[in-house]
Amino acid sequence: MKEWNGFMQGVNLGGWLSQCVHTREHYDTFITEEDFEQLSKWNIDHIRLPVDCDLIETREGVCIESGYDYISKCIGWCRKYDLNMVLDLHKTYGFSFDEGEQEKGFFENEELQERFYRLWERFAALFGKNSDMLAFELLNEVTDKRYCDTWNRIAQKCIARIRKITPDIKILVGGYWNNAAASVKHLWKPYDENVIYNFHCYEPLIFTHQGAGWVKNMKRGYRCDCSCTEGEMLRRTEDMLGLDLVPDGTFDPEHSDDLFGSDFFIRMFREAVESAEKMGTQLYCGEYGVIELADREEALKWYKAIHAAFKYYSIGHAAWCYKAMDFDLSGHDMKEIFD
Image 1 (cartoon, rainbow, N blue to C red):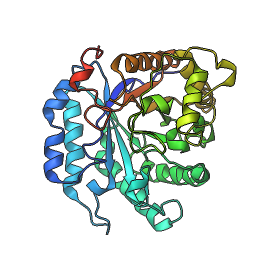
Image 2: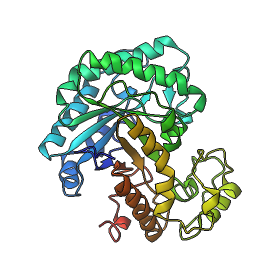
Image 3: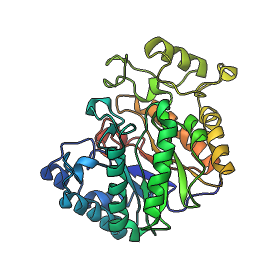
Image 4: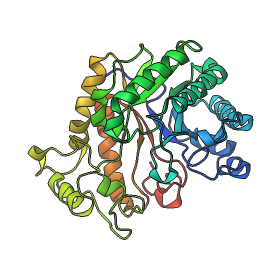
């Protein structure tokens, strides 16, 4: 598959302008220019910047100009340190991938959808001139499959409105099941040649999210390695989590005796790659990673396996997450496997 030049190896800046306490003190201290200087030494070509609607609008719809200033500052630091950037809307009023946010109604309410369109029109007007190094990601992790057709319609309409302002900026669109690779095949044909399909990958969840308190049925003390067969990984998943959280096509019964490794991801991504190629576009993985509770050597095995699949298909990717957020890549305990 054709590479997306400039967006092949990146890192997420989660927790800075999203999934956070939305205060000026937090914005000014959690990430600073020194972090960008450090990231420029990481052998990456881009960062993904998640932002919540809370950064730029009040619930009543009043614009928060200072929020846009932080995005502008991020773009400026990226330019200074020769990094490209994905601007990801991580939450919009009426929808969040995180049920704890209690955001509801976006897919049913045309007023909330109109607000979403206007937000992206403002992003386009303010930042669209940076299309040489900036891409837009419309919305993070649509959850339920029942939203599939509605989301496709909303995405197409939103892109059409963005295109009236900035005709050539790259735009990322992902599917349901929290941007699962298995949902890519149900995305509509790209609006134009500058739309790219997007997915996330934290499979197998039983390994990457071991001990995560926010995962349904996951025990906080549970620990899991990945030095086992695919069949064993599936059995662990069934025993702990059930299969409700497992997207279709994650496990292949014909390979249950195979040791977990890069072939697991190569098979899982194949259908998404074929869908992207059929539609004449590219494929990008905006999030992947292993919780910091996992044994570091076991985490390294997982990273090597998924990176081999990314390389096999020439899929650009951004790891979750640079700092904190339970997936800390800059923490002290990562140093022994960081290279």
